[in-house]
Length: 344
Image (tube, rainbow, N blue to C red; front, top):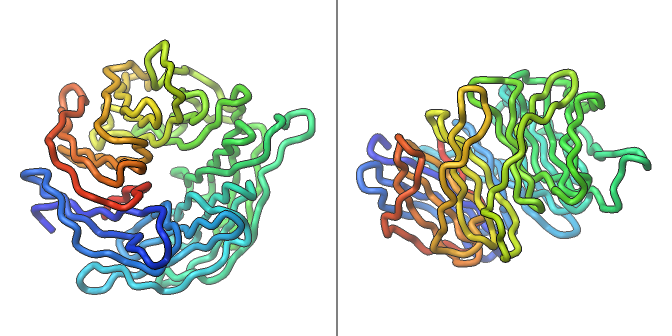
């Protein structure tokens, strides 16, 4: 739609509730309109999309699935098929640039499920389940909790965060078979209890990444070469913060000038200027009007924030010069929203 942006919202919801919803954001006003609602899916807590297909995890505590959809002529998602991850609580997924592989991160079982895809985007089969492992000497006294996966510019390289092991693992992935092989020297380790959750890549430097740590409320700027190198660490909350906080989502503006990270507990979004050397400079930490901003999405002029515990979405205007977010008093009800996924 020329005059609007489209995005899907995933949620924690029962199979009887509308758990995957398509929304429209008007470019001129920032107004929101719900266009479509899908039920029949348990806890589709994270979504991924390309021009032909929508994918979702179905997050069960003791099990879980990946769901594959195609779009009909009106842009509504129609289920193609669903397969078990053969793990527990899938919480994130990603599709490679060749659109023939999908990887899901399973939080409770601490492993990665790799699927081969059909030409129509459906799930062909589970290629394998790969555990994220550290040696006894390296392993902290916590269980593995895979949380996020990202395909790099090279289609055969995959990064995976593990919140429990305080590690970002680096893998080579066979584009034909989906088999993962860890590049152990490139692995990035963090202080125990940091809890690396999500990460984003620098828009112009392919070896530079920003890792958001949930437990420590910090962002690490890392250079991934033969070995990982920490360049910087910044906090997402102001000192001192008495409220217990859990960092959640991290995004980069479409123009590549600013980085944003959301805080749950100290409900806010931290805004940083991305310097020419790739390091971050704090602009402001913006307090929000809702509880538990688990995810958000950045468009040209607007940001949409999902408040998990307030059951609503809120729209903010983005100042392209400063990166700051400004209230527009635009909200919409949404049941337990936890993922905002833009339609390309």
